[in-house]
Length: 121
Image 1 (cartoon, rainbow, N blue to C red):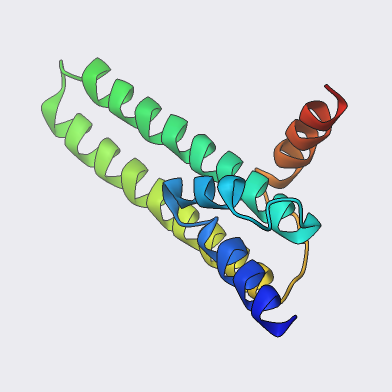
Image 2: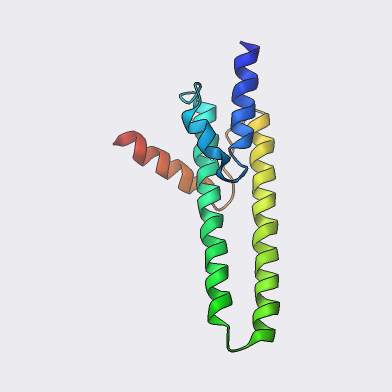
């Protein structure tokens, strides 16, 4: 039983490390409620910040007329996005390692809504 809990803890924790949330979807323990919660939340977190970085890139392209402004603005925006992403990943890993289902700011409600919609289909 302890081995199973350590697997769930590990899989829940790595769900917040970028694309690694996919591993939890294919794990043997994929029906565990804790693992499902953290896997969905990690997936929404990854998707949210992938879109944020893509928007950052689009702003970079749109500001081609002002190279100095583009450099400063994109540097600040990229650093801000990265800091928030790392903070949310750390919060998710912390709560996953303690077997707590705590909603992360910005993405937690979206993950619950997505999981509810997929479960109802």
